Length: 114
Image (cartoon, rainbow, N blue to C red; front, side, top):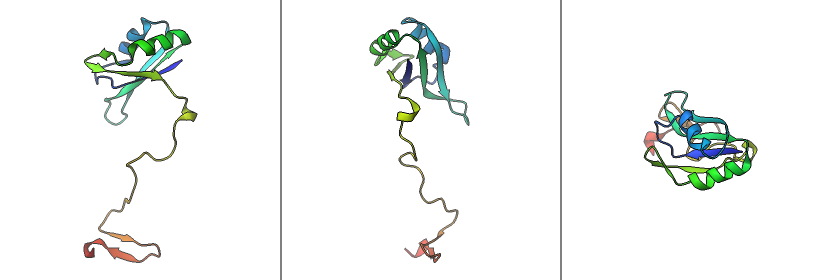
């Protein structure tokens, strides 16, 4: 069973997650996701447990518990194919580099006039 763990402290490590979940059964892997650019924790991670019953018991008992001063969220991870695809909300948009942009037919508009 793949388990998603969120709202972690920035100091929580994969080893910390492993120790936390080992109280419920054998842990195959435990990983906190790190930002590639900064090297800082993204404050969420994944724990893999072979035994479904042990994994569900860990989810039931650890969801909402406090770890390193943070109330964590623990739930069954959704498979990649079940997650939404495409652009994330709030991103994208006009990426022009100056104060002018081109309209639909290549006309140039100066946004200082608006």
